[in-house]
Image: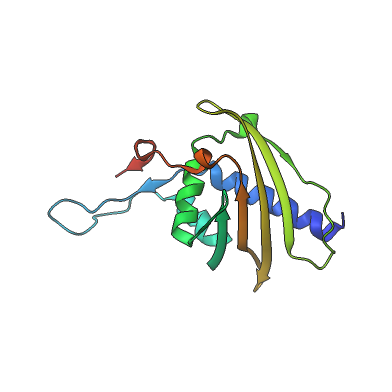
Length: 156
């Protein structure tokens, strides 16, 4: 694997891992006032998602084409199973050329709910104005890994 592909794969691995360990905080509208008062906690998950996924990202998750908002919700579902303490990433050898933006990584983990699982990621990483962004992504794995449980998010 060329250094260029290895660098992109390492970036993708780091980006996905950082995203999945970032707290997600959902802000609901205050009752009666309709305005937010003061500063609240920062939603790191949404910030990292917005910084690392192109605004027009195309996505397929567990065989289903999804839009950007659905991708975010499905990654939040995956977050419920992800623990950096028991995840192992692999960067499979690929046939992609050094000038390709296509990157493959996969990881295995142990979910408290599902038991052992594997997720394969096929992404197109492009660089715009010196910043890498995921312009397309395909996530393969058990579809139930990507289902979000509504009681697991913090609401303020």
